[in-house]
Image 1 (cartoon, one colour):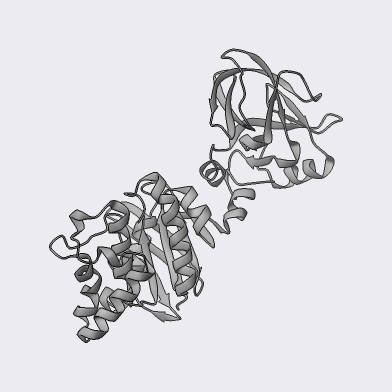
Image 2: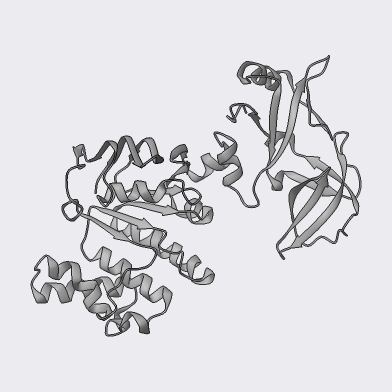
Length: 363
């Protein structure tokens, strides 16, 4: 439908830089997600694309045409908000039909389009109900129907599932993915929920403090995080971080204080070339740490259990090194006791190494 390009896009609110020199290209028919914590600038970026906020500097292009000076109503975009923003005095049919009536569509065409989109979203039986008579999920469907019925070039979704209960959210995610692929409309989705971004986005832009930290497919940002922020933000439970340094007296060792890991010459050479100094951060995802009663490797090290979270399919074991708590995820149910001595083994084939000073990924 449309290619969206952001060029040196910046937004300041007095002394606060909400969006800081963002450069991105969102492909035609792509489901693109902005992911980041509150205050990272993702919603402000979306509002500038919609025309609701004016950029301080930089440019926004739709299919090569600059739209900075085009008002929101002429950009041919449809936006769905976190709060649904339905008119309380209108029933579902009238809410969905509203954008068509504003554009003075004939009555018969309005009726046909509303019924068609209502059937697509399975809400035809709700068309006579007012918003207060609908559940959160039903109101969300009405809000989506109102956006879809216009057949816009671009969908903008700002945390649309935040007010939907957890069980329904799982189904709504799947419905949104199916709808977007069926309609083929370029979609930009803002969320702070990494599960939403990872399961829905063709690509993700991770934002923090107004800057884009990394852009890539869900698996790219998970398996190859560009920096410490992305590594710690993407993944649940989050990645474990151990401060360490490289020692090369005869052997190449990552010295993390409580344990050491022997690494090969190739990895040591990459670390020497790319690091700004001797201080490093070792990153290990919880699924790549094994907790056992017996020692299973020369590099296994001892710790004690701080807490265990049994989730049925898997268990999260919190273990302690000094004053710090780290996490391991293991399949099934485990029965470790608080304070029990255990052995920790790290999968060296799955480690990440970051420069402590720059926080950039080395491996």
